[in-house]
Length: 75
Image (cartoon, rainbow, N blue to C red):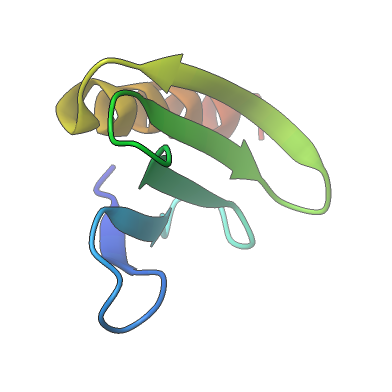
């Protein structure tokens, strides 16, 4: 299951969204907090499914990947 990532807004670094073809309507956002120390992430569809805070962008994206895979198994 591959994440399809893109910038949330043009010209705004360190803020992205992702979706996955495995579960239509499921999406995620990963962004660096103001001040640039921690990465926030959340996954939602019609409601919030999961969220968290990580030390690095890579860890935040990995958390999103795990959540997408977990949700896909439930479907």
